[in-house]
Amino acid sequence: MAATTQTYDSRGRETKPIQWWSRLELVGIYIFILAIVIFDLLPFAWLISSSFGVKPENTSGLFFYIPTEWTLENFNKAFDPAKGNVLKAMLNSLITVGGAVLIAVVVCSLAGYTLSRLRFRGRSAVMYAVLLLQVIPATATILPLYLVMRDLKLLNTLQGVALGLATFQVPFMLWMIKGFFDAVPMELEESAWLDGASRLQALFRIVMPMALPGLGAATVLAFNGAWGHFFLPLIMLSDPEKMLLPQALFRSLLNYTVIDYGMMNAISMIYALPSLLFFFFARKYLLRGTMAGALAGQ
Image (cartoon, rainbow, N blue to C red; front, side, top):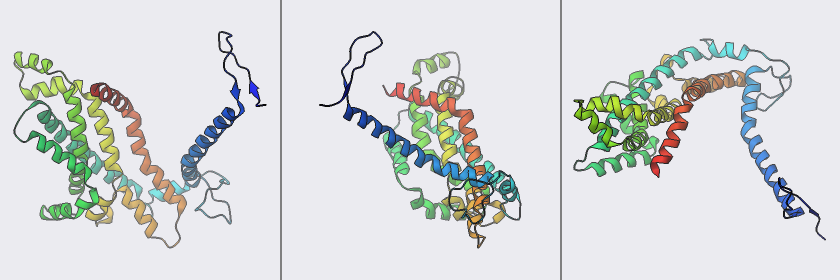
């Protein structure tokens, strides 16, 4: 006879008995979830252990280990101009990615408002052409973009990298911002026009404040997308003094016969910090933008 357990709800009413195979199924689900959590968190545990810890003797730095003591020596080497040179790369990354996000937000706000409010011949073709750009892999357009930057004399410049990163963020941001502009009632703009406001004034005083959660969410996603881009800066930059953080991390892997995993993981933590901080301070816009988009989709 199968073993059963009699249970009662909060009102004292008898509920259906739980069979032993139901318990076994529940245990299996929890074991599966725990395995996924460990699989996801173990690389981060190794990252922290290797960055802040001293490796035990006769232990490979390639694997997870329990540090013998904690230290900041790996971060000192990461900031050393002769080794990691992270400070210069961090400054280059912030300037380049910040400029790319600013360009993308301005362009997509104006273009998104135009596609949302104006009706003109070829509007649908333009929208689907932008969507097609989002589908095409970024690596497939690197060579044409490289040739354009060469003709514009923007190779090996941070301005050229910022412009290139902005072009990769525009298609997704344009569709996202247009969707939030669509959710703003047209009657509010018409009221502003009756009071003497122009279209541009209505955009900045009425539409953009109401679509601020969507703009914030698009900015967060654009920043993370540009911050994690590796291939474009690698192709366009040849001066070591202009390298961004991904390239600094890549070169630290190539410049030594014996890889210093502690210094590499310290650089990795520094590389991840701005993105985490940006998400932390802008998370309310991301959450509000997501919920507003979901409601607008209804």
